[in-house]
Image 1 (cartoon, one colour):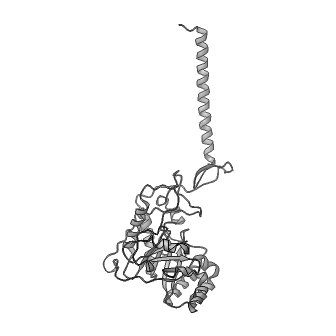
Image 2 (tube, helix red, strand yellow):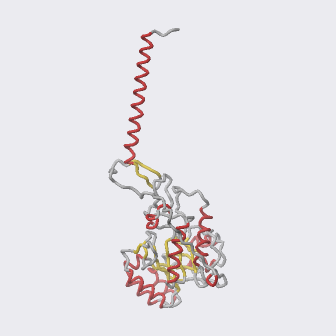
Image 3 (cartoon, one colour):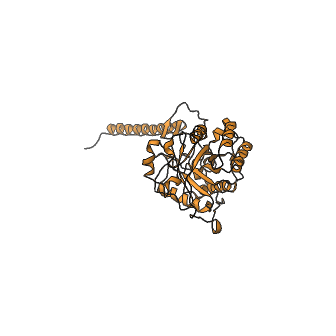
Length: 349
């Protein structure tokens, strides 16, 4: 059956019109998508549209490829300073000093330090999760805290050591905003790959499998060891508690490998390298090391200890507590300097 000429002409015009409308629709849709991009904001849980954002606002950090010529320092520890497991670790009982305590009430910290006996264990925060150093670090690329009295901090450390305290330096390991900001390829990316994932506290987390990261941490540990600290605690030795990061490997294996590498590079017969973890089943590397756990309710102490796999948990598992609760006393425990008077008064009784 033949189609009349007029009908064919009408169908042809309708086809052309439909094609034009389709083309215009596609172009309009593309323009709409491009226009919407300026209002896309990436958050911890994904992405959202925020029409209050100005087109001039800058969000996140631009990821850049590492320089090809950049060199990563590798540390080896052999011979007389190699790992020595023959010396047993003793049970700890003492206090920790945060940088906030030093900044807000240094006079009280100094007063309490003078009152404590010489065999007390004191841990002091030397580098926080923001990445700033609370002492006069000589490491290349180190950012010294502008809000900390570095001279007063140095004098405090010298006084702790001169009194014969067992001194521990606390260092934030994989939670480090400053290093992540300066070394984007070393951090953990958000799923959208738009930049590094940031936790609710505004901090970036580093990749434990990255050689530059472990080299950086090693440099910090060795500097503090040379300053005379008996022990260094690497707090935040974990992955962030989120499923919004890109990491395809075995997280537990990655942490174990990093711990082994750091221990091999830093341990000596008279020095202890310890790890602040969130998983009590974490296996400590061979050598002189401890596991630090915080935010453990006193009612959960027995259950937590039943999960650890380290030998001599009374000495090698350390609880960090903000209170003077006596239920921690069967194990190593460091309490906030804010409760020192209550604890020392109880000892005298």
